[in-house]
Image (tube, rainbow, N blue to C red; front, side, top):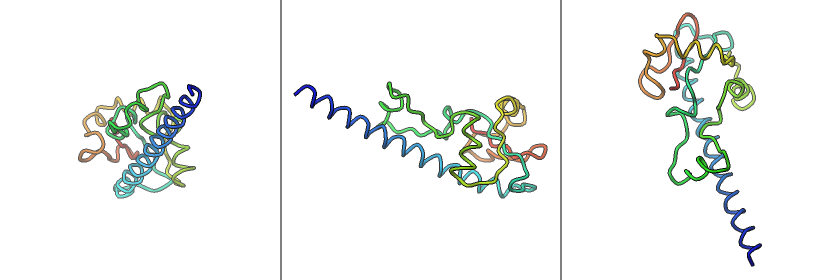
Amino acid sequence: MLCAFLILRMAICSNGAYVYTQLVYDQTARQVTAIMAKVQQLPGYEEGQTPVVFAGSFTDSDFAYRDPAFSRYAEGDLHQVSSALTYDGTIKWWFQHVMGSTANVVADQAQLDQWAEDPRVQAMPAYPEGEYCAMIDGTAVIRIS
């Protein structure tokens, strides 16, 4: 009886974790699509040519998926994350393989850190407020946090 209870409990937990992961993935796709639509309207932006920088941390921003109903998956032992984009290595992969985009996304953490510390970027509002993206020195910069 105990074994059956534990198996049922694990199945419920894994289904909840899967649903949470799918919600995070879907939200990331929606937000990246909306952000890039705005970036493509920036004067001087050329798809595949203009470097694109996401300044800040995805998981510490309003970009992250948050829903109190799923907090136990986000904060628990399952180590689920609140964004499908979590570090520099996932950004370029996401654009190429998930979005099918040719955007020239900067994926070098040192460069991303430099942009995040730039006073012009720090003066910008963070996503999704106002003018969170701008062309700076020929680079499309999106302030995430």
